[in-house]
Length: 117
Image (spheres, rainbow, N blue to C red):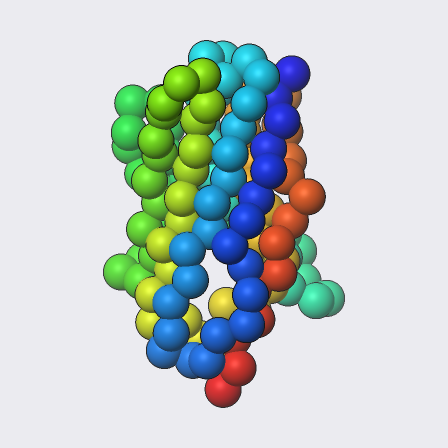
């Protein structure tokens, strides 16, 4: 079992920055990939960025060059960050942390990011 707790969402003006955090606990040594997804109203959930156990990163085209995903392991906790710069109104969504353990997906509760124009 893996538990995920997100923080860092909020309201920001276009061009601003936010950093999201996701603290994973439980069977963290089984986590292969950690990722951030987002879901805007009326749209499907989409993958934003992912980072593997080995440190390889993936970014959606829409956020490449603006968002950075990183991962920090310390004291039986595994934290993943999403640094979001040059935010745009179209980045407005609920952002979800995801952890993949073999064929099982674990999800956080979601954190709202709102970018005003």
